[in-house]
Structures are given as C-alpha cells and as structure tokens.
Length: 125
Image 1 (tube, rainbow, N blue to C red):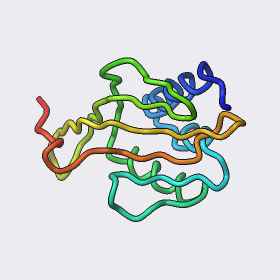
Image 2 (cartoon, rainbow, N blue to C red):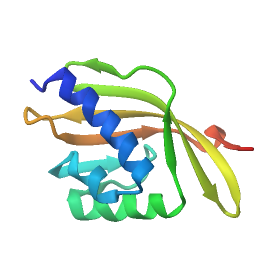
Image 3 (cartoon, helix red, strand yellow):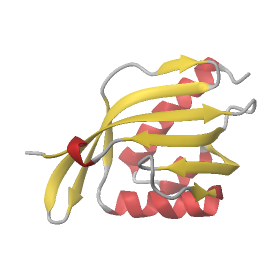
Image 4 (cartoon, helix red, strand yellow):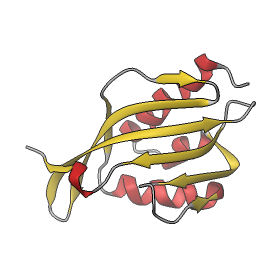
C-alpha cells in the first residue's frame, strides 16, 4: 500500500507545481503509465509525455490551484476539493473541482480523475 503521508504530500506538490508554473513538477508525481481524465468523460491522457503536454497547456492559461478543504486519504486514493483560477477566453474564471489520485505502491499517481462540469465554471472577480 502507498504511504498516506506521501500521498498527501503529492497533492500539496501538485498545487505548488501549478503555483510555480512547472508542468515538469506535476508530471513528476505520476507513474510512467499513468492516466489523466480531466474532466471525467473526456479522452484519457496516457503516459508521462501526454500528461506533460496536457499540464503545459493548462498552465498556459495561468491556472493556479487553491485547496478548499483537507485532503482525504483512504486506501490507495487521495481525494481533494479545490478551485482553479485561470484566464479563459479573455476573462478570469474559477472552476470548482474535486480530483481523485490513485497511487501505486511506489507512491506515484497512476490515475487522476477530475470531477467538474460547465456548471462549476464561474466568472471570477
């Protein structure tokens, strides 16, 4: 089983990597064969190369993350609520999201799923 402290630390590194604008730091928390589904229902990004490309695009919007509550760690999952603050189509937006990270025994993320839809994107002031 993965280490709960390392799982929570990976979530905090994810947020810090966005603050630093480093897609490479985000990709570093993932296993080589990981998948990202953001948002749920969209095509999977598979492997570190696709994941790095996806986060590079995300960070080009100026996206910054804000945790909105404690990280919930259970079994091999870390689940956390947060807001994404970004520039989208010429205006400032906020998206309210819940992410799930599934970890392997090496404390690497093997699956990320982001739960949000159009009703979770709001104008930000």
